Amino acid sequence: MKTKPEILFAAFEATPFMKTGGLGDVAGSLPKALLSAGADVRLILPKFGTIAEKYKKKMEHVADFYLDLSWRHQYCGVETMKLGRLTCYFIDNEFYFKRGRAYGYGDDGERVAFFSKAVLEALKYIQDFRPRILHCNDWHTALIPVFLRSQYAGISRYDGIKTVFTVHNLKFQGIYPQWLTGEVLGLDSEQARHMGMFYDDTVNFLRGALCTSDVLTTVSPTYAEEICTAFYGERAQDIFNSRRGDLYGILNGIDVKQYDPMTDKNLFAPFSAADLSGKRENKLALQRQLGLEEDPDIPLLGLVSRLTEQKGLDLLVWILAELIGEGVQLVVLGLGDEKYENSFRSMAAAAPDRMAALITFDEPLSHKLYAACDMMLVPSLFEPCGLTQMIAMRYGTLPVVRETGGLKDSVIPYNKYTGEGNGFSFANYNAHELLFTLKDAVQVYRENKAAWAGMVQNAMAADFSWAVSAAKYMELYRKLLQA
Image (tube, rainbow, N blue to C red):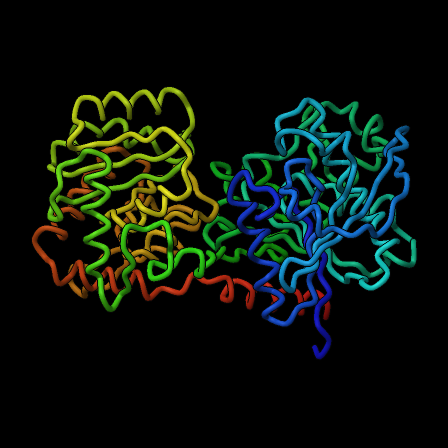
């Protein structure tokens, strides 16, 4: 295909404007990589009140109009600005978006419905761009393909527009009482039922997108297989199994410029795969800063994570005392459920020279951990993609992961016979399987320096750049447009 695919990338958050999790990283990085890969791609998201003033000052007014959402008649503005080469659009409505955070309000269903319909209405007013593909992300944009197929069908400007819907985390689906169907979405029950949105006594936004989008993607090949099963499918496995031919798993990437140990200003010292002396300096400096015993030979383990059940922390808490007894050090950085926070605090208080519990979110400090640690723990119950293991490898820190989702796709377990591998992994969700894997890793670290050094080189040589992911999305877009 000679012409560039024209793509409007819709997300409820994107760095540097708004970020609450991995979706913000993806939406902030993938469109830029697609531009470099040859797509004509533009980003659209809400104009949140918390967006930095330096960006708001650059925005130019495109249009304003009134949007009908069921019986509501709401103001809607469209603003635009350039972020480097990327054109960004912002849906403006202060009632819905001038709030202290992105989510967590009683009217979130109405807010995302407004945004989804506003994205489609905005296409009438953006004169220099007519997308052929709408790429929607997670349940906050799930109503875009639903509205496109129901309320915009037969309108010439929208004819032929294809939709790609990406599931970043199936756990969150936008589930509401059925009365929202007419009261907020402006759909009658027959329409919603036809588009697969009713489940039990609820209306489910995400199921609507899964049933009406042309192509479904998720953020790793293994997760694409897992969500077709009852354990991972979150009661949507029936749809995924019926649409296996339209379902693709494409592994996310990371910003390799942001996570570069040679140029990262957050580190105590720079280093590279060719000269790892700076990694030793980072380890000693972090041990000193956290009050741990200063010794470069003690295995230093890290955990940078939301402290939630999904992240496999029940396994780690169960073996914590035994793990510390192996003569290692552990640094935990993150916020989350109180039971995990308290468990880590308690162990750190009992062994302050062996463990530090940093119950906070601190981006610069996380970089210091990635650079200083020897191993990074990611024992997740499920993990659609995961970025922690990729970032860790970029800094020569070997991940110890459970074989699920993107963790399985990105970490090659150590093979003691061939020396291959860039980390360590275990299969079953079992605390002592995690412990035995960690013991094996610690043994290699202490007794086979050559094998460890080889794995560090393998890890740092792995290419997790967005360019790899963007090339696969470009192939998918072109296939979709040729269909």
